[in-house]
Image (cartoon, rainbow, N blue to C red; front, side, top):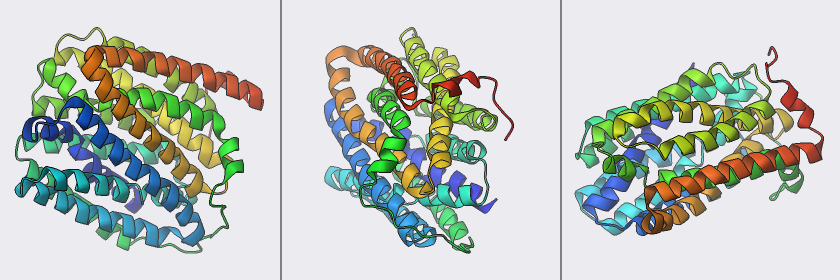
Length: 373
């Protein structure tokens, strides 16, 4: 259970503060929605660089050193984020936020590849990340406006995760010669990479100001944490039952239900009404993420590289989405941004189905009722 523990704790420490970052920037530093979107884009850009580079490095140089380096740097950066608040420096806060994006992108591919090699089921293993995210959001929400202490708390969680990583055994690591730009690998996984890029760009347009949207319909920090946790714990439960289904089916279901989920957001009037939509969101993302991850891991021997590129695609979405989302929220309001994301998920589903047809894999969608694993 050590890899699962690392997954749980690192997710709690990295993603727990997600609910307070937009609030800190808007309320404490008086940043505009567009500037918040730009900062989120820079965070994702740092993640894009590290997930691509260190996913490949994990296959080429080995998992252990990449995993430990990434976790260690994330601990240091999280402590530095707390210090930036204590010294009340906007510039330092933004710089460290970007550093966290880089550090937190270093180790996930190595951890996923380790778990896959250890015969862990990807749905169940991924569920521990969702559980950690939920625990992080709930516990950070308890701190209220004591933001610096929330970051110290998250740094402590990450230290425990690092300690667990030190005890892992990396016997018989298989190192591979992976091209710097693995074009053939990208082409093999194009249906998933392209669909994820479009859907997640739309979703990221929403998430960049989502805590502010929730505040606008009556939620305080504690409620925001609880609302995020409903999504996270819903993912934890749902991911545990997805390993029996064909990955292509899961991706298609995840894309279609994402569009429906965002549509329901448009009819929400108060913060408690969004809870059922959070459960639908949990199901849609659990299906899409587990399906995408298994699709690329099953198809390629370069496990860390393939999953690292998937994370990089999500980071690219995290660059474009927040920037576009900040501008759209300022021009069209929160619900105008949500409507755009709804359409983008529908477009992503259409493209995914087309690319499956071109690649000759459309037959996989007939496995709707799953298969034993």
